[in-house]
Length: 247
Length: 80
Image 1 (cartoon, rainbow over the protein chains, first blue to last red):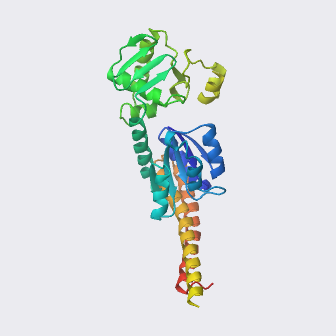
Image 2: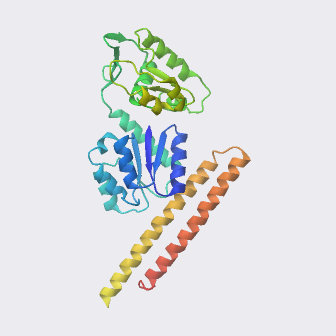
Image 3: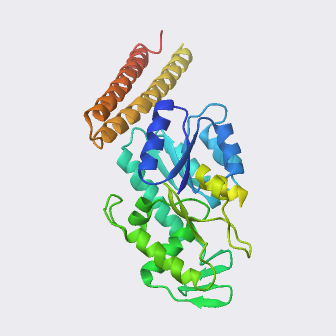
């Protein structure tokens, strides 16, 4: 997931970033409420990890300000205070979960994972990208007018990549979330299945849909128009998101 | 007089609440430092992790002093 951490304690924000990156998330950190609101309005993350005690604008005010878009992202609130009224207020303002400091790194990661599962569970029934259409209820995939046949695992892999459209997904993350394997498992199963997907997509002219981001993993560019997404090769080296902007 | 005492107590309570909140920051960082240290493998990485944990411990100790002060003030009816 693309995660934004809003935490003004420098040491803690660094730990949060490291821990979330270990799980394969892409993390950006901001240290105050105003920067958080600006950052979210510019590029909405999948998950917002929000501390409540922030300078300039506190966490509750961030939630109030973002009221219109809180439904589009998941929110995990962190706080050092245990007042029930504060907890209720945050949940009513759209937070999905609440963690009281001090908390374990493992608890944070488990809660993020649970939020991610809920997010996937409530995602749209139909996923589309560049002429590709996946009906998650009927479990069918078509490219333009041609129906495509995928095995169950290929379907799940393509579904995960479509849900994470617009960002590079590491092999570790795919192993964990598509195969439910340890991210450290020494296997090339991800590469093998990405090749299967490409072969089937290539047969209908959509071979460029699943891109390789060297050193980062695989991804599908966030582009819903008819053309296949294209990456500028020079920009690819500068990172997945930079490449998207050029496309 | 009673009203004054109640105002002082409420201010001391607020101070205690703030101090506990401040203590929770290094405590969380310390927990993370230790948990991450257990994932390290080389002696250098472990040493680095221990140094970080020590820094967070010191920060926690200084915040604990604030908690003690605030609690003592509460015991004495909020007087500084």
